[in-house]
Image 1 (cartoon, one colour):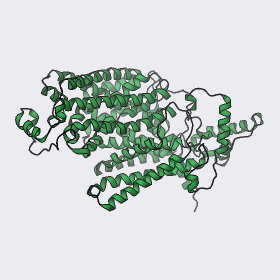
Image 2 (tube, one colour):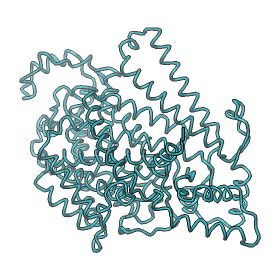
Image 3 (cartoon, helix red, strand yellow):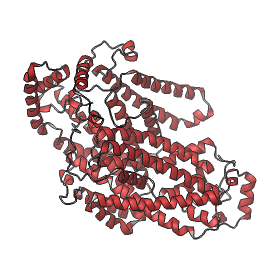
Image 4 (cartoon, rainbow, N blue to C red):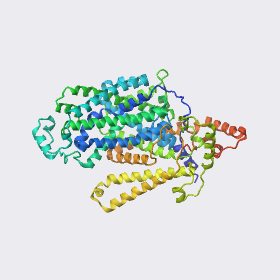
Amino acid sequence: MDCKPLIYFGRQLFRRKYVDCSTEETRLARCLNTLDLVALGVGSTLGAGVYVLAGAVARENSGPAIVISFLIAALASVLAGLCYAEFGARVPRTGSAYLYSYVTVGEFCAFITGWNLILAYVIGTSSVARAWSATFDELIGLLSFGVKESAMVTKVFTCINVLVLCFVMLSGFVKGSLKNWQLSENTFINGTNGTGSENLTEGYSTWHYGSGGFMPYGFSGVLSGAATCFYAFVGFDCIATTGEEVKNPQRAIPFGIVASLLICFVAYFGVSAALTLMMPYYLLDKNSPLPVAFKYIGWDGAKYAVAVGSLCALSTSLLGSIFPMPRVIFAMAEDGLLFRVLARINKRTKTPLIATVVSGVVAAIMAFLFDLKDLVDLMSIGTLLAYSLVAACVLVLRYQPDQFSNATYQMANTSDDTDMTESASTSESQAEVLQGNEGLSLNVVLFPENTHPTQQSGSIVNACVGFNGLFILILCLFAVYAKAPLLEGKPWSICLLLVIMLLCMFFTVIIARQPENKTKLSFKVPLLPYLPVISIVVNVYLMMQLDRGTWIRFAIWMVIGCVIYFAYGMRNSSESSSYSLSTDRTARVFKDTVSVSNGEAVPPEKEAFIHDIDEYPADSRNTEDDV
């Protein structure tokens, strides 16, 4: 049986994108600074949810311990944010997680990531547009007019929103009382019988208030609240889509991501603390907690300030959803995975005008035609999948050798310029250790002799990341669907859980034992590989919390995407063989040049690259080992 067609098909699925980050040339306008990115991230993340979410979670899940729920959710979001920040420093190009997957894992995985990002942004835009439809058309026009104008409006609205939230926090700390964090069941009974609050007119005969105190629903309630609060931090990843529109993106993108998450955590923490200090958590209104809280303390006029802040939050949230969506579509269309007409840039505004208008129209149609109640969870699947893939890509890329094929997009040149002798010594050391042809054994895996990554150590990491992902998936499925026997303490369930956890830890330790790439970047994820692995566990566990109907709708969306990819994207991809002729000619010129230049010997990694070109001239870019 001839396996060549199958091998060629597999190479097409996993061909990687070549990104030259040594040049800042772009068709988009570089006009954003660090402050613009922080405002964009805060505006996208700190949306209307801060005015609603805190009351619902405090009342039904966590009580006053909602502050801990937000802390746990923030830590989980920071793990994903750190991974995004490293890739923003390494590959500062438009496309966010889509591009990161393309240069690291392969084309098909990148298409899946980008397709789900589009889903997340479309649903996010549609859901907010339903609440703020009066200005929807104007916001679409603003985004089409120019990115700098969009950033200016975002900064103004975000500043108003933050000022209102600061007022809420100060009010809570002035008028609040710690007694509301120390309530007992007697307080519940007296409060429900002795107050004239409108909140107590219905539903209190069957509603349970927990056991009282700071953590009335126990730690399980805190974790349940954290799972809900996690989605309040979704939105910071829009910063990573601005790589070609930012001045000094290697530094601005990591700082913007981390700073926006920190500001959002302080705001969520402060508002939830203020709410539960101003009034008992069981009296909070699920739909509009802040106006009811101010009425409870006798400050009725403050509801107007809350209304202004809420409208500004809706506007920035809508801008934050619309802003990255056309840029992901533009990146995919420019690569040929979506229709190339979507990659056209307006000459005057330097924005992806067609992609912006099309994405806005699709979001508007969805907001008009569909009930989004059942579709909102799809946004979570797309976002969490992107977070998981970015964390996996960081693991893969940090343990790969510096090869000729990917040297141009590894950002050693973002730091201070190194001298020629250091570069020469680096090349020599890479040539010596690149191959790593030792026999594979447990001793080699756990105690590698090389201090620099080799092809062998990189392959070990790739395999371990794959096995780790599989066992993390099994672990999360077991933790969710075998919850009852685990809580009952059944020995078989606990033993099986421990075995799966030990396997995950084993593969993580193997990854940690491999030599790490020493490429200098303006930002790197600390505590590798443990932080990315924990991030993947958290993301997959939250995905497993979603119901069966959500997964069915997700499968339908994926089928539509696969039809587009296999019918159009695979044949029209910029990385396909039909686009490789110019690259082939360039590589052959490079071969002739390095063979005769100063009579020097060709290093092994370049020799292997040239050999691959001779053997597969029509598919040279597809067979590069870009990682």
